[in-house]
Length: 429
Image 1: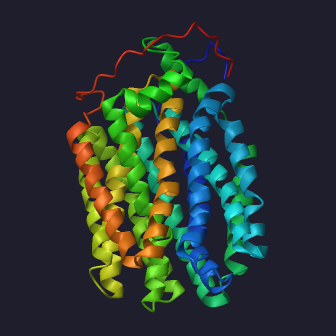
Image 2: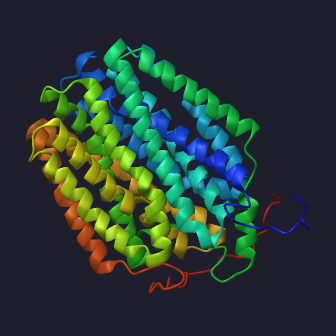
Image 3: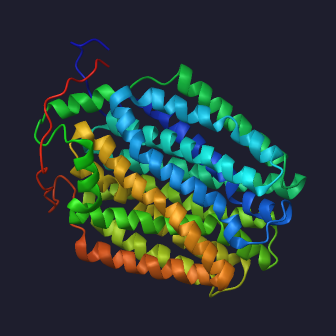
């Protein structure tokens, strides 16, 4: 792109690249989904892990690594561009199928999930920032909704496919051959077909220099505790990932303890994740009614669905309640992420979203510890009760503290930075 060529934004205007990023986030979902139904049962039935807390360790390693890398992925995406970070993210996933196929002990699975955490942080962060770059402010909620919808549809499809394969051929190696194909194809697409998008964010930022060039430490403070609305979003994002963790660890173990086969577990877990596809609608809805209402509805609905899972018995009720909790997640998930996107200047938006995503995905690690302790020392059901209670509590914090951030009719006014940084040059795109 030449320096004199005007930069336009819009999903329709960049449909080719936007569609490729949709395909890649679907692949990101397939990658993590390939573990959802199979790996916890693999640990218990093949690798002989008896401790629920130890089984949860592979999500702990994933969550904290992904959280830390989320923090820096946005910063790196602003400094070096979206594409190099995206390619690096897919490169780190290349050894993962090999580890899952040949791992002789659970420790290897935990190490493999460190690579998965890096992969998910870098690829999903860049996929969503690239979509926002291309879409522009008028379609920001829709872009986030599409990103999360296709990403979590990938999670659902990955869980379902690997569950079916495992039910027919065994827990390994066949399910992870599918994973290997996904990772290699996504890596090649990232190298040869994706083009850089950071210049669109830079051009958008040039239109308004107010609050630009905020130092990274100030971004971290603002998005964590310096702004009550952003704090409410960060804590809600942290707690809502307990639900995702529950469906990753506790739901497969709980259902199989009730005599449900692994293929059926894949369906129940897949239905929960499949509801995330509705984020296409819920992200667009928030562009029309604001971010706050869908977040509040979603927190309480997801918590109610989780609670219901242990109050009923039978395949159909489990499927319905898994879907209800998934619908709640579809309402809250993209719109929580849009809150820091609304509140940030384009020049530090990726960093601001990185801070939010750090706190959100640390919920995987904290949630895995909480859920593992509940299952280990109380009961499998206790993990469901604890997760539901915390979702209700967190939803209350959102109701009381979160202001509306929608740029057209929001009430939120971000505070002025504590200090400003000197002018910095922006590298050529």
